[in-house]
Image 1 (cartoon, each protein chain N blue to C red):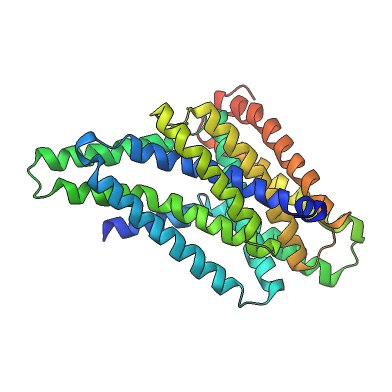
Image 2: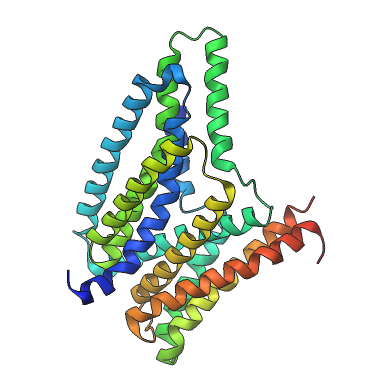
Length: 250
Length: 71
């Protein structure tokens, strides 16, 4: 790969890597922390079904967006990326400020596990099927998120390989880390990754949706990194502001 | 079918958790598109104004959410 191609591809690769890492780490935690009696068959089956859906969804979405006009793709997928990025950045800020629950993912997992225990206690015919449904229900949104990210970043940026490589790299890091740590990602790590990936996706989304409506950018592609830096700075400024608002200091 | 609803909610939740925030982003983008066609905006300012608007929307939403959730 030439130096120019790497320079053009690395912002999209890094965006997909950072955003996927959060989702993959939580997905591995869901599988690793599943109750021992359901761990083998149901968890493996749930993971396989989720992976099949991941490849099917990514393939179908990529094939679909490649059939639509590039300008429309840039506008629509740029807007979706912007929504995704700003939502992630907003949540990271609210969690860091103590406004939102910092362990929302873990709480969702705990709710699913307590539902499973309740069914087991009340003599449900097959807790294995409920365990499988729980694993799939928890994994699907994460798998869909990574799938959408690869397609959106790839289609809006004009090349699907860099975001796919970024997401794959994140998976290869998340699996050994998840297996070694055997617990949910620490809230501080999760918030940091969410803030960084949210700002990155918001920067890319702003750039591409702007291009989609016909706005010109100073320095063209070079405007992406200042946008990302601006959103990171904005997030860091907003954390103390939100903290003071929720504590009633201002 | 509850699991399907949960999955669909999860997928929509990837993009929208606060409907007002998402609507404001759409409104700013649509407003930007209209302004570009109706008024003369200096090309150097187009992107900056668009990004500044999104940053302000984020700031307003975070501030309002924090105020509303004050114990």
